[in-house]
Image 1 (cartoon, rainbow, N blue to C red):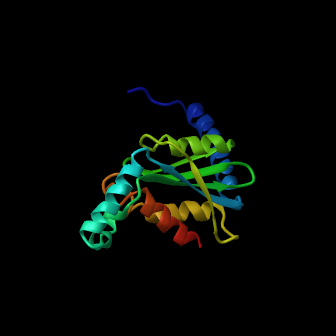
Image 2: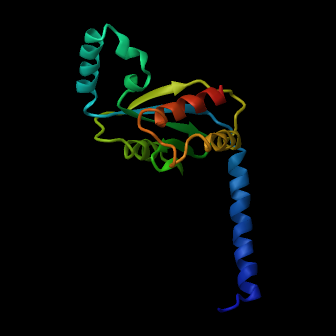
Image 3: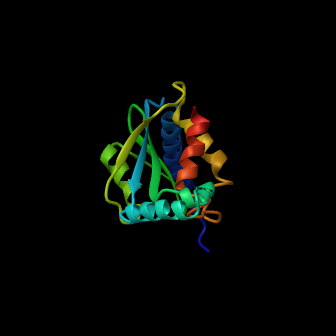
Length: 171
């Protein structure tokens, strides 16, 4: 095994210090707006029609189960700061985040996680005006035990529940 030279470690430490300083600076950025992005799936119309028919035949009892009322949509959040946008979403691969200076890139990253999407719906969300990116990251990290790749379930523990829980935490 080859031993690292002292100057290599020193140089990498300098690089890491400037990166970590930038990350700390970015975390202090105030959140300006929060947008919920909803990506409806193409087959959702037929599923909703089936739910109506099933509701008639079961005298509405089928609507009691929240699992059966899930919409066929993918949800994600975009947080705007002064310098960039921060995307947070939950998929079967766990919680995914991304930073970009381009809002369209952020929307596309959420759309890419949808199954056969046909549209993009945007909703402005309320939030506590004092929040910083660090606050958001801390709240997202607090949800990791409940929303990770090992406990994702398309009906019981999905992106819709994740967005709902995160929005409750930031209000």
